[in-house]
Image (cartoon, rainbow, N blue to C red):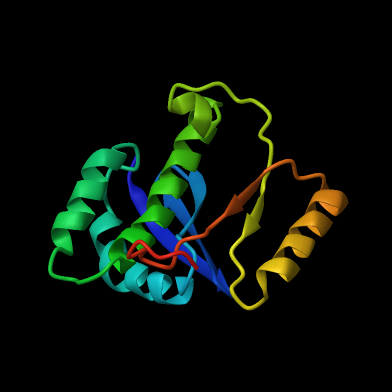
Length: 158
């Protein structure tokens, strides 16, 4: 099964990838967020040409091919773009095998409990605590991810 076409769809900071094979099978994946429009451009300029014509079911070899084929490109954008292709190919495989990606990776699907996130830096800690309480009361979150360290750390709290 050969990768025949690749498309991206971007809105805001979200970019999706659709992969289609020569057999007509398709999968949908998501690129890493944050400047996803840049990742989509990198996808078309650097990743797509290495993926077109490749075996859609050999994700490991394809990932190696992309990383090695773009080794002179600095930064994380190639990896961010590659996530869209990788997740689309896992989606494709899941559809072909009639399994969830979780099952393909050896797991068992089960309910997930969502959590709230404290990533705001534009309000006081007191206002952030009130915001988290509202999220708890409104959506029933029972857990929160709270970042207390500065970006890239340096052993300093925010």
